[in-house]
Image (cartoon, rainbow, N blue to C red; front, side):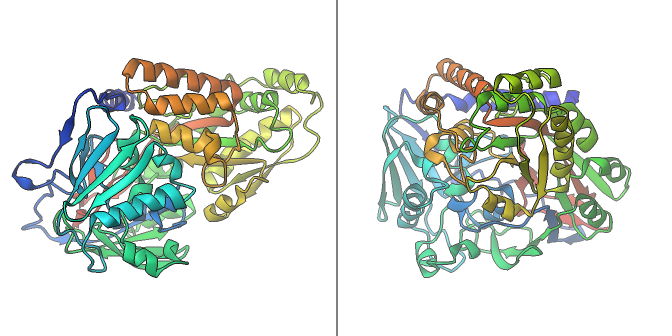
Length: 529
């Protein structure tokens, strides 16, 4: 645990360096000396003289929902998207901004104009050459056509491109403290305009990017096969192919790892961590969690439109039992929509107290329970077990919970405004604006954004203020106040912040691991005995 805290503090200090940067003067970010960009792909170790395997297999517990970047809001889709596509700018393993498809960028003195110099001779997987027009097309589409991503570019007034000068210019409504972070997100990956227009009705099932890996096959609920793109602008990747298997049951994932059927998995089932650690053919890696597991209330439906009911159910959530029973202690109790590893986090703990919960229900007009069965949608074995703990405690205060276990894609479709409660994870929690805007702002209400159907003018105003405030101290004050209001209103019950444990083949090398979770996998390989 001490190691986890140290890593957390390091990330807090690092993120704070750019979280509230001011544009008081024109600044330029460029590629590294010698004209080669410092990218996540750089620094690849040599494989010379080693007996290596470069066809890799990983797995995740749920299938891809969409291959269309601006439509994606889930980590399972983004695993594939991050390998197939590139963004204008990126973050390295220490979460510092680095060039991507833009080899440099310049921010005007007033912070209202950002000019990106686009790399020349970058190839898409279909052989087309990247142009600034492709960038403008992709960002315009994300801003104007796709509901899931439009809020991320709300501060952008206009997107201009100059194919001859190889530039893309963002004209801002006002300076934005969030825009550069937003441009590194999965929704902002750049697509080939011609390819998208050739797939008007099924672009969510196809992919053509500039990334290090190309989509070869997608067998729904089975696996996705990616193969190496030899012409990647950052250099030919080491990894020949990556097969991403879908294995929903957590112990089955561990068994596949032990059997050598997969090379690594993110999120070893907590009850299996000891056996993986003791296996001499495997290694583990603990990564500070940036994902929050939460229960969301539907504010459109009684009795969840009553704040006292939401507060009562929060007091009925025994987070410590969930952490110990389900995660074997590999988690921290949720106290905010933010994880504690990022700037501006503020602790707002709710005491687990069933007497307090009963008193709040009585005050809300429900002294004998809510009068109907409440449905709670979940999508994995671990979350089902968490839901059972919550179900048992709610029964003690007269609230009858029915757990609906469903496949992840079905759960996403279930978030249509008619649901009662849903349990999900939010994996973009190191982006302050996106976390707040996508989950709690009225402009994003819907199944792919604000799934609580929360419409609170005070919360909206604080989110908008935090997005544009460039002064670090003022921005921190805004986000602290915002977290206080959210703690009072309880659109979510933040249950826990998981410590992710990766299980890996001991010979796995070449992966750049990010301190925010995940990694750059395109240069991975396995050294075999």
